[in-house]
Image (cartoon, rainbow, N blue to C red):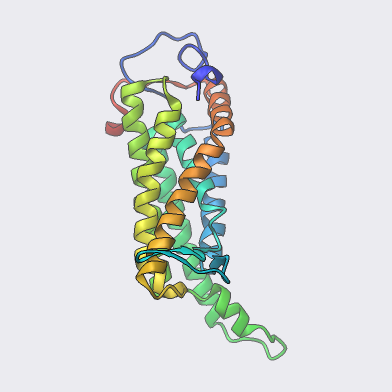
Length: 257
C-alpha cells in the first residue's frame, strides 16, 4: 500500500517536519462526531455479540484438535472490525491521549448500557406485555458476558492505540499501512483472546476445538477486515489531517502526553 494517498508534507499544511509525530487537538473539529460513531459501534457490537453464530453448521472438518468447520463466531463479527478501524483513525490523527479519552468514554457508556438493560429487564412487566422472556433473553446481561466484553474492549483498544502511536513515533507520516495493520494485529489478538476466554461457555462453546476455532476465526477475520478497508481508512485519515487546522507535531512523544 503506497502512502501517496496521504499529503506529501506534514498533513499537507506546509508546516516543517518535526522530530516527533504529528497529531491534531481533540477540541472541536471532527473529533466529537468520530468519537460518537466509535461509541455507537461499541454499543451495537456488544448487543450483537451475545448471539452465538455458526457458518457451515452441517459440515465437520478438524485438523488435529482444531475445529476448522463449522466456523464458530458471534453476532458482532461484522461490526467489531469497524470499532478498531475507527480507533486507528482516532489514534493516527489525534494521538494516544485523545484516543484513550475516547476509550474511557466508550467504557463508561458500556457500563451505563449494562446498568440500563439490567434495570429494564427487572422492571415488572405489564399484564399486556407478552415478550418479557424474549426481552430478557436478548438484553438480559450475565456477569460472564459483561466481563468478557468490557475486558476485551478495554485491553484490545488500549493495545491497538498504544501500538499505533508507538510505531508512528518511529515512522512519522510514512508507512501508514504498517502501523494500521501492526496495531490491529496487537489489539485484535488481545481483544479476541480475552473476550473468547471469558465468554466462550456463555455463548455455547463447550470444546477446546471450538474455542480455538473461535479465537482464530475472530482474530483472522478482524485483521483481514482492516486490510480490506485500508484504502477507505487511508482516505478518511488523509481528509481529517487536511481539515484539522491543529494537526501538527507534538512537542513531546504522544505516549507521554
